Length: 182
Image (cartoon, rainbow, N blue to C red; front, side):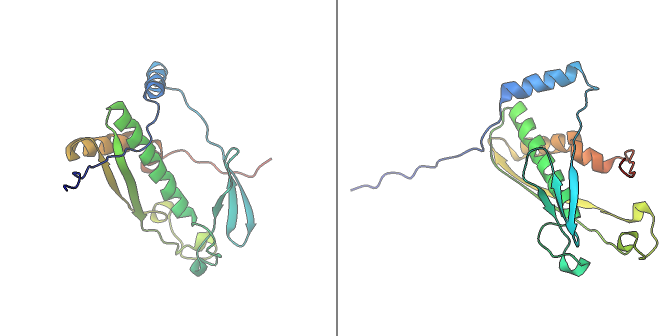
């Protein structure tokens, strides 16, 4: 008795609405100056643990590791920043692949950045200038698979990086103000 020949089943990530994406793109072409506003409210719980509220979602918990006097109950602020970048790149890669009609079967983004805090948040540590603090380099590796060649997938990733709102917020100097609330 002959065994049935093995079959390979290829699954794809859940697709986004391509028609909706195309309508959104047209809206952007018709009004390139349009902007939205992201709003977050952060409430400190104690020590270095805080809760950030975004819309009606569960709070995003932020903490510091033990060696920085936190409780290590949640990701550190810099890790949250990297997760925002990873999420934005994933959205962009998915959108560009959808635009180019490439079905993705796998998408993982690995991010790392070196950060130090010798200034101790400005609480008596080493005197430093803003450009000396924060991430000095961000390294991103993208694992993506789909029904396209490696070169086509690489172009999708590069295109998404170029147009990423979060990546461009991190790459480009932007006006920044902070003041006491009324």
